[in-house]
Every structure is written in C-alpha cells, then in structure tokens.
Image 1 (tube, protein in one colour):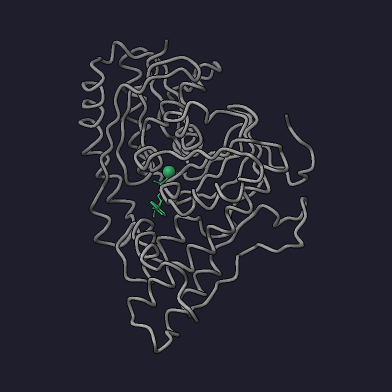
Image 2: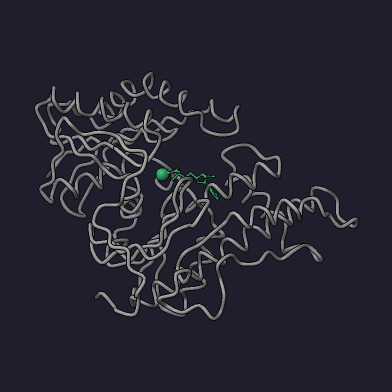
Length: 361
Ligand code: KG4
Ligand code: ZN
C-alpha cells in the first residue's frame, strides 16, 4: 500500500488529495478543492492573480487534506504534483511546495502531467474505466482523442487544431453574455431549447465529412474556431419571429449539437478502429450531459460502454494527480529537486500515429 499526497495548481483550482492503494485498487481518503472565484469578475483566468491565490491557499488546502485523511506527513510515501501543462506561475507554486514538503518528509516527489491525471480520474469512480479503452479528453486547455492500450501506453490519434472544447464553450458563453467559466451555462441554456428553433442555423460539423478515411490528417482531429465565427454571425441574424432569449437558446443548442456530434463521431471512429469496448471521457467538458449522451448513442452499435466522472472529478482536482502519480511511482519513476514547471509538456508514453488500421490489442 502506498500513501500519496496529490497537489494540483495548474490553473484556477487549488487542490490537494490523499490517496492510498496499489495499482487500480485505490481508496481516496480525502480531496479538497478551492476554486478561485475571483476570475469570474474578469471573464477569464488572470495568471498573476491565479499564482498569488495559490500561494495563499495551498498550505491550508494541503493541511485540510491531511487532516481529513487523518494522517500526518510522516505517513506519506510520495508527493505527486502537477508540473505541466498549465500556467507556469501557478504550476510553480505547487511544484515548489511539493518539492519542499517531500524534502522535509524525506520522501520522493513525482511530477505529473495534468492530462494524464484527467485520464485516470474516471477510474476513481468506475472500476471498469481502466485500459484498454478509447479516451476523449476535453478540458479548457486541451482536446485529445487517445487510444489507451494500458496505463502509460498512449497513442494520440487526434487533437484540436485551434480552440479546445472547453475554450469553445467559454467563448460561446461570452458571445451569449453568460458568466465565466461558461460551459455549464451554455449547457443549461441549450437545454431550454427542446430542439433547434425552426429556421435557426444548423452549424456545419467542423472537420466532419463522410468521405474521410483512416489515415487522413483530419480523420480524428477537430477544430472549433470556425464554429465560433458561425455563432457570432448567427446571433446577429435573429429571425424576427423569435424573442432574443429564444434565439439565444436555439443558438446555444445548435452550437452544442455541432460540437457533440463531431466529438462523438470521432470518438466512435477511434473505438471502432482499435476494437475497444470501453470509452472514457475526461476533463471539465465531461460534465456536459449532452456530450456523454451523444457519445453513448454513437458507440451503441459497437457494444461499447461509456464512462464519465462526476463533476467533482471531471474538473481539475488533486485526486486524479495522486492517482496518476501512484502509477508513475509504481513504475519506478522519481523526480528530484530539479523538477520544474512547464507551460506545455508532451503526454508521457504517447505515440502520435495516424495510420490507424492496425488494432493494438
Ligand atoms: O478540466 P478543467 O476543469 O480545466 C482545464 O484543465 O482546463 O475544464 C474546465 C472547462 C471549462 O472550459 C468549462 O467551461 C468546461 O470545462 N465545462 C463545461 C461544463 N462544465 C465545465 N463545458 C461544457 N459543459 C459543461 N457542463
Ligand atoms: Zn484540467
């Protein structure tokens, strides 16, 4: 049994968690997440404010997590801390603190890739959300479609060419006059439109064509910036028979439909190509029920099960960092005091491969 302290400070959540276990047999003993509300005032995350807020919050958040788990630092075996990708100033707060804590406790520290954390998050709630599976990671900063043959054995099939899925939701929210972060507000508004309003635009599904074949560069990739421009024009061109509110709801719905259909189809393509019967959705946008439903419907013909985490584990949290850290620890990895923070960082264990005919088991 290994006792891991996880620390996450890559964006605007200060989080710490204690996780105990071995392999996939783990128990989450505590999880504390402090969301920085201040960024709502500015309509987006202000990096300098985020770093300062982490500085103030991190010690009490870690102390609370240890207290909730009923342990002290002497009971820990390893500290796992997000060291990228993310806001470098925000990451540095967690990395510096994690290194100091590990040094003082005489235990190792391990740097964890934030997106690998998202990949592990679902397994904390769903014991069957373990490899092999197809993974759709959709957060505020990243959109990745992966084939996961095993933990640490990843094939990056597709990604966004421009905006991340969460970023697209946040930008559309801004256009609709909704608060930041906007994903859940867009989802709520879209839910008020039972169907796209008659006469309302049906947005072209970005990077989705029938004649795409495995091996084509855009077979798995996505792109959302064109959709944003389409929304902008559609909002200006309201049909006179609709009130502003009904029109906005219809647009939110049409936007979400286009995004969901694109992601669901690309995910189904990946599951089919690799013969996977499990699909795991992770990242903040995994909170979106329409997305989970859309993917579930699209892979139904493949007899595939779809798993998504609850909102607390879908959005940024340290439990997923502790879980990914445990995996790295069990693989024998250790970081040292030269561990640094990186704004961009390649997912470890990843091969990018678009020649997708081969099944990998
Ligand atoms: O994974 P996450 O907490 O942070 C990053 O690593 O970026 O994801 C945050 C993103 C935001 O863009 C937010 O708008 C989006 O997740 N999000 C949603 C929903 N809830 C959160 N997007 C769509 N529908 C939701 N219900
Ligand atoms: Zn994240």
